[in-house]
Image 1 (tube, rainbow, N blue to C red):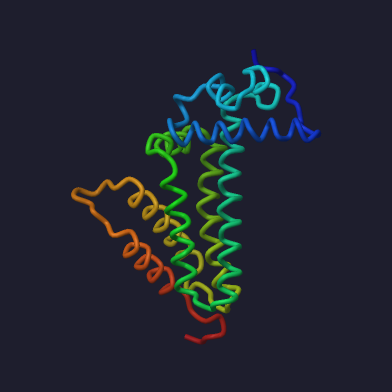
Image 2: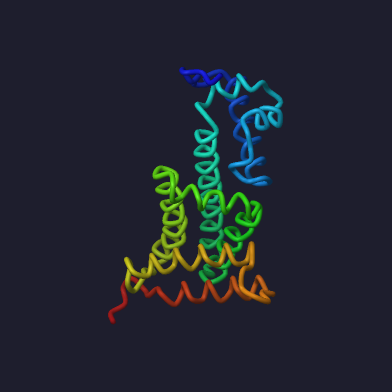
Length: 209
């Protein structure tokens, strides 16, 4: 029976326990999808009781929201690392390729079932839909911030930000779970060409057209 009052972990042991729940849920969702996974299954994977899960979360949806936030935070941390690399190498094109590789690899860690479940939730759950949509924009903006930090801006910010977001999202999906008939893509070629398309959208911030 779910608890009505959710515990906010303060002590190290409690914080670690909540972290185990999130890690167990994330692994279960990635493997089996969101809808088939149950709270007891998450509890078993985390090595704790079902009641303990309900002490920290109202329901499975609460856990999913934390998992999605964690995913976004991890990808932004990856981007920050790539930004530091760019500051050393000055190679904008290679940095964008590396970032796209990070996104594609992260996408491929999850099952097609989990992806499809999230897409379903995107349209039936307003909060999850807003979060997923904002995540795409946040990750795209992180790439564009790298351009800005090195003196580049989009030629048409509003339109090309949308186009870049859609392009990156589509490339992640198609490289992870090909849908086109006879698809046999060379991953690096797709990533390199996608990077070139995105870079073609930018100009020097101080340039005059």
